[in-house]
Image 1 (cartoon, rainbow over the protein chains, first blue to last red):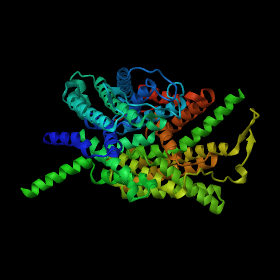
Image 2: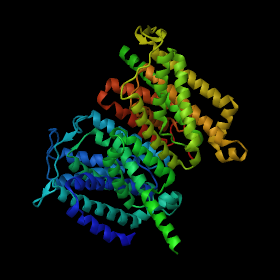
Image 3: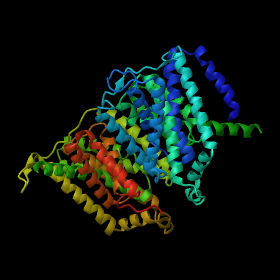
Image 4: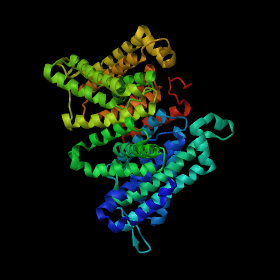
Length: 318
Length: 288
Protein backbone atom coordinates (compact mmCIF):
# COMPACT_ATOMS: atom_id res chain seq x y z
CA UNK A 1 0.00 0.00 0.00
CA UNK A 2 2.84 2.42 0.82
CA UNK A 3 4.15 2.18 -2.75
CA UNK A 4 0.91 3.72 -3.92
CA UNK A 5 1.10 6.82 -1.76
CA UNK A 6 3.35 8.86 -4.04
CA UNK A 7 1.33 8.26 -7.23
CA UNK A 8 -1.89 9.00 -5.35
CA UNK A 9 -0.42 12.21 -3.97
CA UNK A 10 0.75 13.34 -7.43
CA UNK A 11 -2.62 12.58 -9.01
CA UNK A 12 -4.47 14.38 -6.23
CA UNK A 13 -2.22 17.44 -6.52
CA UNK A 14 -2.52 17.56 -10.31
CA UNK A 15 -6.29 17.17 -10.48
CA UNK A 16 -7.16 20.91 -10.43
CA UNK A 17 -5.25 21.28 -13.72
CA UNK A 18 -7.85 19.23 -15.56
CA UNK A 19 -10.97 19.07 -13.43
CA UNK A 20 -13.86 21.49 -13.82
CA UNK A 21 -15.10 23.63 -10.96
CA UNK A 22 -18.09 21.35 -10.50
CA UNK A 23 -15.86 18.31 -10.16
CA UNK A 24 -13.53 20.06 -7.75
CA UNK A 25 -16.20 21.14 -5.28
CA UNK A 26 -19.18 18.86 -5.80
CA UNK A 27 -17.39 15.57 -6.45
CA UNK A 28 -13.85 15.67 -5.11
CA UNK A 29 -14.21 18.23 -2.33
CA UNK A 30 -17.39 16.60 -1.11
CA UNK A 31 -15.82 13.13 -1.29
CA UNK A 32 -12.83 14.26 0.75
CA UNK A 33 -15.04 15.83 3.41
CA UNK A 34 -17.31 12.78 3.64
CA UNK A 35 -14.20 10.62 3.58
CA UNK A 36 -12.65 12.42 6.56
CA UNK A 37 -15.85 12.00 8.59
CA UNK A 38 -16.15 8.36 7.53
CA UNK A 39 -12.48 7.90 8.45
CA UNK A 40 -13.37 8.63 12.06
CA UNK A 41 -15.83 5.71 11.92
CA UNK A 42 -13.43 3.43 10.05
CA UNK A 43 -10.82 4.19 12.71
CA UNK A 44 -13.18 3.19 15.53
CA UNK A 45 -14.29 0.05 13.75
CA UNK A 46 -10.87 -1.08 12.58
CA UNK A 47 -8.91 -0.38 15.74
CA UNK A 48 -11.39 -0.32 18.63
CA UNK A 49 -13.82 -2.79 17.13
CA UNK A 50 -16.97 -0.75 17.67
CA UNK A 51 -19.39 0.65 15.12
CA UNK A 52 -20.51 4.11 16.10
CA UNK A 53 -23.52 5.90 14.68
CA UNK A 54 -22.58 9.13 16.39
CA UNK A 55 -19.79 10.31 14.06
CA UNK A 56 -22.07 12.71 12.23
CA UNK A 57 -23.06 14.07 15.63
CA UNK A 58 -19.40 14.79 16.37
CA UNK A 59 -18.94 16.42 12.97
CA UNK A 60 -22.13 18.34 13.72
CA UNK A 61 -20.77 19.60 17.04
CA UNK A 62 -17.76 21.03 15.19
CA UNK A 63 -19.96 22.42 12.42
CA UNK A 64 -22.36 24.11 14.84
CA UNK A 65 -19.39 25.58 16.75
CA UNK A 66 -18.04 27.10 13.54
CA UNK A 67 -21.48 28.44 12.67
CA UNK A 68 -22.06 29.89 16.13
CA UNK A 69 -18.71 31.69 16.24
CA UNK A 70 -18.72 32.95 12.64
CA UNK A 71 -20.63 35.58 10.77
CA UNK A 72 -24.01 34.02 9.92
CA UNK A 73 -27.45 35.08 8.85
CA UNK A 74 -29.21 33.61 11.89
CA UNK A 75 -28.09 36.47 14.13
CA UNK A 76 -27.06 34.07 16.88
CA UNK A 77 -23.62 33.68 18.34
CA UNK A 78 -20.42 35.66 18.65
CA UNK A 79 -18.02 36.30 15.81
CA UNK A 80 -14.48 35.21 16.62
CA UNK A 81 -11.32 35.06 14.49
CA UNK A 82 -11.46 31.97 12.26
CA UNK A 83 -8.40 30.40 13.88
CA UNK A 84 -9.97 30.46 17.36
CA UNK A 85 -13.30 29.29 15.95
CA UNK A 86 -11.65 26.35 14.24
CA UNK A 87 -9.69 25.34 17.33
CA UNK A 88 -12.82 25.63 19.47
CA UNK A 89 -14.72 23.48 17.01
CA UNK A 90 -12.10 20.75 17.10
CA UNK A 91 -11.88 20.96 20.90
CA UNK A 92 -15.66 20.63 21.31
CA UNK A 93 -15.81 17.72 18.87
CA UNK A 94 -13.01 15.96 20.76
CA UNK A 95 -14.77 16.61 24.05
CA UNK A 96 -18.07 15.34 22.67
CA UNK A 97 -16.30 12.25 21.38
CA UNK A 98 -14.90 11.61 24.86
CA UNK A 99 -18.36 12.05 26.37
CA UNK A 100 -19.91 9.55 23.99
CA UNK A 101 -17.06 7.21 24.85
CA UNK A 102 -17.90 7.59 28.53
CA UNK A 103 -21.53 6.67 27.88
CA UNK A 104 -20.81 3.80 25.52
CA UNK A 105 -17.61 2.47 27.06
CA UNK A 106 -19.18 -0.67 28.51
CA UNK A 107 -20.84 -1.59 25.27
CA UNK A 108 -19.27 -3.52 22.48
CA UNK A 109 -20.45 -4.86 19.15
CA UNK A 110 -24.13 -4.49 18.40
CA UNK A 111 -24.80 -2.79 21.72
CA UNK A 112 -22.58 0.13 20.79
CA UNK A 113 -24.54 0.53 17.56
CA UNK A 114 -27.81 0.90 19.42
CA UNK A 115 -26.46 3.25 22.04
CA UNK A 116 -24.62 5.56 19.66
CA UNK A 117 -27.66 5.64 17.39
CA UNK A 118 -29.80 6.70 20.33
CA UNK A 119 -27.26 9.38 21.29
CA UNK A 120 -27.04 10.74 17.79
CA UNK A 121 -30.82 10.92 17.44
CA UNK A 122 -31.14 12.60 20.83
CA UNK A 123 -28.72 15.25 19.57
CA UNK A 124 -30.73 15.60 16.36
CA UNK A 125 -34.00 16.19 18.22
CA UNK A 126 -32.24 18.53 20.62
CA UNK A 127 -30.85 20.74 17.83
CA UNK A 128 -34.32 20.82 16.36
CA UNK A 129 -35.94 22.02 19.56
CA UNK A 130 -33.28 24.34 20.91
CA UNK A 131 -33.35 27.84 19.48
CA UNK A 132 -30.91 29.69 21.72
CA UNK A 133 -27.78 27.85 20.58
CA UNK A 134 -28.74 25.68 17.61
CA UNK A 135 -31.44 27.91 16.11
CA UNK A 136 -33.78 24.93 15.85
CA UNK A 137 -35.24 23.76 12.60
CA UNK A 138 -33.71 26.48 10.43
CA UNK A 139 -30.18 26.34 11.81
CA UNK A 140 -27.48 28.64 10.50
CA UNK A 141 -26.70 29.80 7.00
CA UNK A 142 -24.42 32.29 5.31
CA UNK A 143 -21.24 30.89 6.80
CA UNK A 144 -18.25 31.35 4.52
CA UNK A 145 -14.82 29.79 4.42
CA UNK A 146 -12.19 32.21 5.73
CA UNK A 147 -9.55 33.99 3.70
CA UNK A 148 -6.06 33.42 5.04
CA UNK A 149 -3.07 35.50 3.95
CA UNK A 150 -4.87 36.55 0.80
CA UNK A 151 -5.95 33.01 -0.09
CA UNK A 152 -9.73 32.81 -0.20
CA UNK A 153 -10.80 29.30 0.71
CA UNK A 154 -14.18 29.99 -0.84
CA UNK A 155 -12.42 29.57 -4.18
CA UNK A 156 -12.89 26.02 -5.60
CA UNK A 157 -9.20 25.29 -6.21
CA UNK A 158 -8.05 26.65 -2.84
CA UNK A 159 -10.85 24.80 -1.07
CA UNK A 160 -9.98 21.57 -2.85
CA UNK A 161 -6.37 21.84 -1.70
CA UNK A 162 -7.55 22.63 1.83
CA UNK A 163 -9.69 19.47 1.85
CA UNK A 164 -6.87 17.44 0.35
CA UNK A 165 -4.36 18.67 2.94
CA UNK A 166 -6.82 18.01 5.76
CA UNK A 167 -7.49 14.51 4.46
CA UNK A 168 -3.78 13.73 4.37
CA UNK A 169 -3.33 15.15 7.88
CA UNK A 170 -6.28 13.07 9.10
CA UNK A 171 -4.93 9.85 7.59
CA UNK A 172 -1.47 10.68 8.96
CA UNK A 173 -2.89 11.29 12.43
CA UNK A 174 -4.74 7.98 12.36
CA UNK A 175 -1.59 6.12 11.28
CA UNK A 176 0.45 7.83 14.03
CA UNK A 177 -2.24 7.18 16.64
CA UNK A 178 -2.46 3.52 15.73
CA UNK A 179 1.32 3.10 16.07
CA UNK A 180 1.48 4.99 19.39
CA UNK A 181 1.31 3.15 22.74
CA UNK A 182 -2.25 4.40 23.21
CA UNK A 183 -3.14 3.11 19.74
CA UNK A 184 -1.63 -0.27 20.53
CA UNK A 185 -3.61 -0.39 23.77
CA UNK A 186 -6.74 0.45 21.72
CA UNK A 187 -6.14 -2.54 19.49
CA UNK A 188 -5.46 -4.60 22.60
CA UNK A 189 -8.88 -3.65 23.97
CA UNK A 190 -10.41 -4.66 20.65
CA UNK A 191 -8.80 -8.10 20.72
CA UNK A 192 -8.76 -8.99 24.41
CA UNK A 193 -9.99 -6.36 26.86
CA UNK A 194 -9.47 -8.60 29.86
CA UNK A 195 -5.79 -9.17 29.10
CA UNK A 196 -5.24 -5.44 28.67
CA UNK A 197 -6.80 -4.89 32.09
CA UNK A 198 -4.63 -7.54 33.66
CA UNK A 199 -1.58 -5.71 32.30
CA UNK A 200 -2.65 -2.80 34.48
CA UNK A 201 -3.96 -0.58 31.67
CA UNK A 202 -7.38 0.90 32.49
CA UNK A 203 -9.53 -0.03 29.51
CA UNK A 204 -12.10 2.71 29.98
CA UNK A 205 -9.44 5.42 29.64
CA UNK A 206 -8.28 3.78 26.43
CA UNK A 207 -11.80 3.52 25.05
CA UNK A 208 -12.68 7.12 25.97
CA UNK A 209 -9.44 8.40 24.37
CA UNK A 210 -10.13 6.46 21.18
CA UNK A 211 -13.64 7.95 20.99
CA UNK A 212 -12.22 11.41 21.70
CA UNK A 213 -9.64 10.97 18.94
CA UNK A 214 -12.37 9.89 16.54
CA UNK A 215 -14.22 13.04 17.61
CA UNK A 216 -11.20 15.11 16.60
CA UNK A 217 -11.10 13.51 13.14
CA UNK A 218 -14.86 13.82 12.68
CA UNK A 219 -14.54 17.45 13.81
CA UNK A 220 -12.09 18.14 10.97
CA UNK A 221 -14.69 16.84 8.54
CA UNK A 222 -17.39 18.86 10.28
CA UNK A 223 -15.51 22.16 10.00
CA UNK A 224 -14.83 21.62 6.31
CA UNK A 225 -18.40 20.55 5.73
CA UNK A 226 -19.90 23.72 7.16
CA UNK A 227 -17.52 25.83 5.06
CA UNK A 228 -18.44 23.77 2.01
CA UNK A 229 -22.23 23.82 2.52
CA UNK A 230 -22.19 27.35 3.96
CA UNK A 231 -25.00 26.29 6.28
CA UNK A 232 -25.86 23.79 8.98
CA UNK A 233 -29.18 22.73 10.47
CA UNK A 234 -30.69 19.82 12.33
CA UNK A 235 -30.95 17.96 9.02
CA UNK A 236 -27.15 17.93 8.81
CA UNK A 237 -27.06 15.76 11.93
CA UNK A 238 -30.19 13.72 11.19
CA UNK A 239 -30.68 10.09 10.31
CA UNK A 240 -29.87 10.52 6.60
CA UNK A 241 -26.30 11.78 7.01
CA UNK A 242 -25.74 9.30 9.86
CA UNK A 243 -26.61 6.37 7.63
CA UNK A 244 -24.63 7.88 4.72
CA UNK A 245 -21.43 7.84 6.76
CA UNK A 246 -22.01 4.21 7.70
CA UNK A 247 -22.69 3.29 4.07
CA UNK A 248 -19.52 5.07 2.95
CA UNK A 249 -17.37 3.26 5.51
CA UNK A 250 -18.89 -0.11 4.73
CA UNK A 251 -18.73 0.09 0.94
CA UNK A 252 -15.16 1.42 1.04
CA UNK A 253 -13.93 -1.20 3.44
CA UNK A 254 -13.49 -0.89 7.18
CA UNK A 255 -10.09 -2.49 7.54
CA UNK A 256 -7.91 0.35 6.27
CA UNK A 257 -8.12 4.17 6.60
CA UNK A 258 -8.09 4.60 2.81
CA UNK A 259 -11.34 2.63 2.55
CA UNK A 260 -13.24 5.65 3.87
CA UNK A 261 -12.12 7.78 0.92
CA UNK A 262 -12.76 5.10 -1.68
CA UNK A 263 -16.23 4.63 -0.23
CA UNK A 264 -16.83 8.38 -0.23
CA UNK A 265 -15.92 8.75 -3.91
CA UNK A 266 -18.10 5.78 -4.83
CA UNK A 267 -20.98 7.20 -2.80
CA UNK A 268 -20.69 10.71 -4.27
CA UNK A 269 -20.48 9.34 -7.82
CA UNK A 270 -23.59 7.22 -7.28
CA UNK A 271 -25.32 10.18 -5.65
CA UNK A 272 -24.45 12.50 -8.53
CA UNK A 273 -24.90 10.18 -11.48
CA UNK A 274 -27.59 7.76 -10.34
CA UNK A 275 -30.00 10.29 -11.79
CA UNK A 276 -28.85 9.24 -15.26
CA UNK A 277 -29.38 5.54 -14.59
CA UNK A 278 -32.61 5.59 -12.66
CA UNK A 279 -35.03 8.22 -11.52
CA UNK A 280 -33.70 10.64 -8.90
CA UNK A 281 -36.45 9.64 -6.48
CA UNK A 282 -35.23 6.08 -6.17
CA UNK A 283 -31.70 6.98 -5.09
CA UNK A 284 -32.23 5.34 -1.71
CA UNK A 285 -33.17 2.04 -3.33
CA UNK A 286 -30.02 2.14 -5.42
CA UNK A 287 -27.73 2.96 -2.51
CA UNK A 288 -29.52 0.42 -0.31
CA UNK A 289 -28.99 -2.29 -2.94
CA UNK A 290 -25.32 -1.32 -3.28
CA UNK A 291 -24.94 -1.60 0.49
CA UNK A 292 -26.76 -4.94 0.54
CA UNK A 293 -24.64 -6.39 -2.26
CA UNK A 294 -21.39 -5.19 -0.66
CA UNK A 295 -22.34 -6.51 2.77
CA UNK A 296 -23.34 -9.89 1.36
CA UNK A 297 -20.77 -10.38 -1.37
CA UNK A 298 -17.76 -8.51 -0.06
CA UNK A 299 -17.81 -7.59 3.62
CA UNK A 300 -14.35 -6.07 3.27
CA UNK A 301 -15.72 -3.42 0.93
CA UNK A 302 -14.32 -2.14 -2.34
CA UNK A 303 -10.81 -1.99 -0.92
CA UNK A 304 -10.99 -5.62 0.22
CA UNK A 305 -12.32 -6.69 -3.18
CA UNK A 306 -9.49 -4.89 -4.98
CA UNK A 307 -6.99 -6.65 -2.75
CA UNK A 308 -8.41 -10.11 -3.32
CA UNK A 309 -8.56 -9.48 -7.08
CA UNK A 310 -4.91 -8.45 -6.99
CA UNK A 311 -3.98 -11.57 -5.10
CA UNK A 312 -5.88 -13.74 -7.52
CA UNK A 313 -4.06 -12.18 -10.47
CA UNK A 314 -0.79 -12.80 -8.66
CA UNK A 315 -1.71 -16.44 -8.12
CA UNK A 316 -2.61 -16.86 -11.78
CA UNK A 317 0.57 -15.28 -13.06
CA UNK A 318 2.69 -17.35 -10.71
CA UNK B 1 -54.24 17.76 39.12
CA UNK B 2 -56.57 16.85 36.28
CA UNK B 3 -53.89 17.85 33.83
CA UNK B 4 -51.40 15.66 35.63
CA UNK B 5 -53.65 12.62 35.27
CA UNK B 6 -54.46 13.27 31.66
CA UNK B 7 -50.75 13.43 30.93
CA UNK B 8 -50.43 10.21 32.89
CA UNK B 9 -52.99 8.53 30.65
CA UNK B 10 -51.30 9.87 27.54
CA UNK B 11 -48.06 8.46 28.85
CA UNK B 12 -49.70 5.08 29.34
CA UNK B 13 -51.09 5.16 25.81
CA UNK B 14 -47.69 5.87 24.39
CA UNK B 15 -46.14 3.24 26.63
CA UNK B 16 -48.65 0.67 25.39
CA UNK B 17 -47.74 1.47 21.80
CA UNK B 18 -44.03 1.39 22.53
CA UNK B 19 -44.42 -1.91 24.32
CA UNK B 20 -46.19 -3.62 21.43
CA UNK B 21 -43.54 -2.33 19.04
CA UNK B 22 -40.57 -3.12 21.29
CA UNK B 23 -41.52 -6.62 22.44
CA UNK B 24 -41.15 -8.01 18.92
CA UNK B 25 -37.77 -6.36 18.68
CA UNK B 26 -36.61 -7.68 22.03
CA UNK B 27 -37.94 -11.18 21.32
CA UNK B 28 -35.86 -11.44 18.16
CA UNK B 29 -32.83 -9.96 19.87
CA UNK B 30 -33.13 -12.18 22.92
CA UNK B 31 -33.10 -15.42 20.96
CA UNK B 32 -30.94 -14.68 17.96
CA UNK B 33 -28.84 -11.68 18.97
CA UNK B 34 -30.03 -10.03 15.77
CA UNK B 35 -30.47 -6.29 16.01
CA UNK B 36 -33.30 -5.99 13.58
CA UNK B 37 -32.96 -2.50 12.18
CA UNK B 38 -35.74 -3.36 9.74
CA UNK B 39 -38.19 -3.52 12.63
CA UNK B 40 -39.45 -0.02 11.89
CA UNK B 41 -40.12 -0.64 8.21
CA UNK B 42 -41.90 -3.89 9.09
CA UNK B 43 -44.09 -1.84 11.41
CA UNK B 44 -44.85 0.71 8.70
CA UNK B 45 -45.50 -2.07 6.18
CA UNK B 46 -47.96 -3.68 8.58
CA UNK B 47 -49.71 -0.34 8.98
CA UNK B 48 -50.09 0.08 5.21
CA UNK B 49 -51.37 -3.47 4.78
CA UNK B 50 -53.79 -2.93 7.64
CA UNK B 51 -54.97 0.33 6.08
CA UNK B 52 -55.64 -1.30 2.72
CA UNK B 53 -57.42 -4.19 4.38
CA UNK B 54 -59.65 -1.96 6.49
CA UNK B 55 -60.44 0.23 3.47
CA UNK B 56 -61.39 -2.90 1.52
CA UNK B 57 -63.40 -4.82 4.10
CA UNK B 58 -64.20 -2.35 6.87
CA UNK B 59 -63.16 -4.86 9.49
CA UNK B 60 -60.87 -3.09 11.93
CA UNK B 61 -60.00 -5.96 14.25
CA UNK B 62 -59.24 -8.21 11.26
CA UNK B 63 -57.16 -5.34 9.87
CA UNK B 64 -54.83 -5.60 12.84
CA UNK B 65 -54.42 -9.28 12.12
CA UNK B 66 -53.90 -8.63 8.40
CA UNK B 67 -51.18 -6.06 9.11
CA UNK B 68 -49.52 -8.48 11.51
CA UNK B 69 -49.62 -11.33 9.02
CA UNK B 70 -48.33 -9.10 6.21
CA UNK B 71 -45.34 -8.08 8.27
CA UNK B 72 -44.81 -11.65 9.51
CA UNK B 73 -44.62 -12.95 5.94
CA UNK B 74 -42.04 -10.32 4.97
CA UNK B 75 -40.07 -11.01 8.16
CA UNK B 76 -40.09 -14.77 7.57
CA UNK B 77 -38.93 -14.25 3.99
CA UNK B 78 -36.08 -11.99 5.18
CA UNK B 79 -34.93 -14.50 7.77
CA UNK B 80 -35.21 -17.46 5.38
CA UNK B 81 -33.54 -15.91 2.36
CA UNK B 82 -30.90 -13.53 3.71
CA UNK B 83 -30.55 -13.14 7.46
CA UNK B 84 -30.55 -16.82 8.36
CA UNK B 85 -27.40 -17.39 6.34
CA UNK B 86 -25.39 -15.07 8.51
CA UNK B 87 -26.58 -16.32 11.89
CA UNK B 88 -23.91 -15.53 14.46
CA UNK B 89 -22.34 -12.78 12.35
CA UNK B 90 -24.19 -10.05 14.22
CA UNK B 91 -22.60 -6.98 12.72
CA UNK B 92 -23.22 -8.23 9.22
CA UNK B 93 -26.83 -8.99 10.07
CA UNK B 94 -27.25 -5.51 11.46
CA UNK B 95 -25.82 -3.97 8.30
CA UNK B 96 -28.06 -6.17 6.15
CA UNK B 97 -31.15 -5.10 8.07
CA UNK B 98 -30.10 -1.45 7.67
CA UNK B 99 -29.78 -1.95 3.92
CA UNK B 100 -33.16 -3.68 3.81
CA UNK B 101 -34.80 -0.92 5.78
CA UNK B 102 -33.39 1.73 3.42
CA UNK B 103 -34.69 -0.17 0.41
CA UNK B 104 -38.08 -1.02 1.90
CA UNK B 105 -38.67 2.50 3.18
CA UNK B 106 -37.94 3.88 -0.28
CA UNK B 107 -40.15 1.33 -2.04
CA UNK B 108 -43.00 2.03 0.37
CA UNK B 109 -42.61 5.74 -0.28
CA UNK B 110 -42.95 4.88 -3.94
CA UNK B 111 -46.02 2.73 -3.40
CA UNK B 112 -47.94 4.72 -0.82
CA UNK B 113 -46.50 8.19 -1.32
CA UNK B 114 -45.56 10.65 1.37
CA UNK B 115 -49.12 10.99 2.68
CA UNK B 116 -50.25 10.56 6.24
CA UNK B 117 -52.61 7.64 6.67
CA UNK B 118 -55.20 7.24 9.38
CA UNK B 119 -56.86 3.87 9.67
CA UNK B 120 -60.63 4.13 10.03
CA UNK B 121 -61.93 3.06 13.43
CA UNK B 122 -65.08 1.01 14.03
CA UNK B 123 -67.96 3.13 15.31
CA UNK B 124 -67.70 1.58 18.74
CA UNK B 125 -64.27 3.06 19.30
CA UNK B 126 -64.92 6.52 17.94
CA UNK B 127 -65.44 9.25 20.47
CA UNK B 128 -64.59 8.88 24.10
CA UNK B 129 -65.72 7.64 27.45
CA UNK B 130 -65.98 9.53 30.71
CA UNK B 131 -63.44 8.25 33.19
CA UNK B 132 -64.83 7.65 36.68
CA UNK B 133 -63.32 9.59 39.62
CA UNK B 134 -61.48 12.08 37.38
CA UNK B 135 -64.62 13.04 35.49
CA UNK B 136 -62.80 13.75 32.23
CA UNK B 137 -63.50 12.35 28.80
CA UNK B 138 -60.88 10.14 27.27
CA UNK B 139 -60.65 8.70 23.79
CA UNK B 140 -61.92 5.10 23.67
CA UNK B 141 -59.38 4.01 21.12
CA UNK B 142 -56.57 4.95 23.44
CA UNK B 143 -58.09 2.96 26.28
CA UNK B 144 -58.57 0.02 23.92
CA UNK B 145 -54.94 0.37 22.96
CA UNK B 146 -53.89 -0.09 26.56
CA UNK B 147 -56.09 -3.17 26.85
CA UNK B 148 -54.59 -4.61 23.67
CA UNK B 149 -51.09 -4.03 25.03
CA UNK B 150 -51.95 -5.87 28.23
CA UNK B 151 -53.53 -8.73 26.27
CA UNK B 152 -50.47 -8.99 24.02
CA UNK B 153 -48.21 -8.91 27.06
CA UNK B 154 -50.15 -11.70 28.76
CA UNK B 155 -50.30 -13.81 25.58
CA UNK B 156 -46.60 -13.38 25.03
CA UNK B 157 -45.93 -14.34 28.63
CA UNK B 158 -48.11 -17.43 28.24
CA UNK B 159 -46.33 -18.32 25.01
CA UNK B 160 -42.91 -18.04 26.60
CA UNK B 161 -43.72 -19.49 30.01
CA UNK B 162 -46.24 -22.20 29.20
CA UNK B 163 -45.79 -23.60 25.69
CA UNK B 164 -43.27 -25.97 24.19
CA UNK B 165 -42.12 -23.27 21.76
CA UNK B 166 -41.63 -20.99 24.75
CA UNK B 167 -39.46 -23.54 26.48
CA UNK B 168 -37.37 -23.86 23.33
CA UNK B 169 -37.10 -20.08 23.03
CA UNK B 170 -36.01 -19.72 26.64
CA UNK B 171 -33.49 -22.50 26.24
CA UNK B 172 -32.19 -20.79 23.11
CA UNK B 173 -31.79 -17.48 24.89
CA UNK B 174 -29.72 -19.15 27.59
CA UNK B 175 -27.60 -21.45 25.47
CA UNK B 176 -28.08 -21.59 21.75
CA UNK B 177 -25.34 -24.08 20.98
CA UNK B 178 -26.70 -26.55 23.50
CA UNK B 179 -30.14 -26.28 21.93
CA UNK B 180 -28.65 -27.09 18.55
CA UNK B 181 -26.70 -29.99 20.04
CA UNK B 182 -29.93 -31.42 21.41
CA UNK B 183 -31.16 -31.77 17.87
CA UNK B 184 -33.62 -28.90 17.63
CA UNK B 185 -33.96 -27.35 14.22
CA UNK B 186 -32.84 -23.86 15.24
CA UNK B 187 -33.15 -22.62 11.69
CA UNK B 188 -36.88 -23.29 11.72
CA UNK B 189 -37.29 -21.92 15.24
CA UNK B 190 -35.49 -18.73 14.25
CA UNK B 191 -37.82 -18.25 11.30
CA UNK B 192 -40.85 -18.75 13.53
CA UNK B 193 -39.58 -16.31 16.14
CA UNK B 194 -38.63 -13.77 13.50
CA UNK B 195 -42.13 -14.08 12.06
CA UNK B 196 -43.71 -13.61 15.50
CA UNK B 197 -41.51 -10.57 16.17
CA UNK B 198 -42.39 -9.08 12.79
CA UNK B 199 -46.08 -9.82 13.36
CA UNK B 200 -45.97 -7.84 16.59
CA UNK B 201 -44.33 -4.99 14.67
CA UNK B 202 -47.01 -5.12 11.99
CA UNK B 203 -49.80 -5.14 14.56
CA UNK B 204 -48.19 -2.22 16.36
CA UNK B 205 -48.19 -0.43 13.02
CA UNK B 206 -51.92 -0.92 12.46
CA UNK B 207 -52.72 0.07 16.03
CA UNK B 208 -50.58 3.18 15.85
CA UNK B 209 -52.15 4.02 12.50
CA UNK B 210 -55.56 3.90 14.19
CA UNK B 211 -54.80 5.65 17.46
CA UNK B 212 -52.43 8.20 15.91
CA UNK B 213 -51.47 8.12 12.23
CA UNK B 214 -48.66 6.77 10.10
CA UNK B 215 -46.47 8.39 7.47
CA UNK B 216 -42.95 7.89 6.13
CA UNK B 217 -40.76 8.52 9.15
CA UNK B 218 -43.02 6.61 11.51
CA UNK B 219 -40.84 3.58 10.78
CA UNK B 220 -37.76 5.22 12.14
CA UNK B 221 -39.55 6.82 15.06
CA UNK B 222 -40.66 3.41 16.29
CA UNK B 223 -37.32 1.78 15.58
CA UNK B 224 -35.67 4.42 17.72
CA UNK B 225 -38.22 4.12 20.52
CA UNK B 226 -37.86 0.34 20.44
CA UNK B 227 -34.10 0.69 20.70
CA UNK B 228 -34.31 3.04 23.66
CA UNK B 229 -36.99 0.93 25.36
CA UNK B 230 -34.93 -2.25 25.14
CA UNK B 231 -31.72 -0.49 26.14
CA UNK B 232 -33.47 0.82 29.25
CA UNK B 233 -35.54 -2.27 30.04
CA UNK B 234 -32.96 -4.89 29.24
CA UNK B 235 -32.32 -6.49 25.88
CA UNK B 236 -34.12 -9.73 25.24
CA UNK B 237 -36.54 -9.46 28.16
CA UNK B 238 -40.25 -8.99 27.52
CA UNK B 239 -40.83 -7.77 31.07
CA UNK B 240 -37.98 -5.33 30.55
CA UNK B 241 -39.67 -4.07 27.39
CA UNK B 242 -42.84 -3.39 29.40
CA UNK B 243 -40.94 -1.55 32.12
CA UNK B 244 -38.82 0.35 29.62
CA UNK B 245 -41.90 1.31 27.60
CA UNK B 246 -43.63 2.61 30.73
CA UNK B 247 -40.63 4.68 31.77
CA UNK B 248 -40.00 6.13 28.32
CA UNK B 249 -43.68 6.68 27.48
CA UNK B 250 -44.36 8.53 30.73
CA UNK B 251 -41.10 10.49 30.57
CA UNK B 252 -41.85 11.58 27.05
CA UNK B 253 -45.39 12.75 27.80
CA UNK B 254 -44.52 14.50 31.05
CA UNK B 255 -41.54 16.05 29.30
CA UNK B 256 -43.79 17.25 26.52
CA UNK B 257 -46.35 18.64 28.97
CA UNK B 258 -44.08 20.37 31.45
CA UNK B 259 -40.88 21.15 29.54
CA UNK B 260 -41.77 21.06 25.85
CA UNK B 261 -38.39 22.24 24.61
CA UNK B 262 -36.41 19.60 26.38
CA UNK B 263 -38.79 16.64 26.28
CA UNK B 264 -36.30 14.53 24.37
CA UNK B 265 -33.63 15.17 26.99
CA UNK B 266 -35.62 13.29 29.65
CA UNK B 267 -35.63 10.14 27.58
CA UNK B 268 -31.95 10.52 26.95
CA UNK B 269 -31.12 11.12 30.62
CA UNK B 270 -33.01 7.96 31.60
CA UNK B 271 -31.07 5.99 29.04
CA UNK B 272 -27.69 7.32 30.12
CA UNK B 273 -28.49 6.81 33.80
CA UNK B 274 -29.47 3.19 33.17
CA UNK B 275 -26.35 2.60 31.09
CA UNK B 276 -24.15 4.09 33.78
CA UNK B 277 -25.51 1.98 36.63
CA UNK B 278 -26.83 -1.11 34.89
CA UNK B 279 -25.37 -1.45 31.38
CA UNK B 280 -27.42 -4.57 30.66
CA UNK B 281 -30.70 -2.72 31.27
CA UNK B 282 -32.97 -2.77 34.29
CA UNK B 283 -34.21 -6.33 33.83
CA UNK B 284 -31.53 -7.55 31.44
CA UNK B 285 -29.17 -10.38 32.15
CA UNK B 286 -25.47 -9.56 32.11
CA UNK B 287 -23.59 -10.94 29.12
CA UNK B 288 -21.52 -13.96 29.98
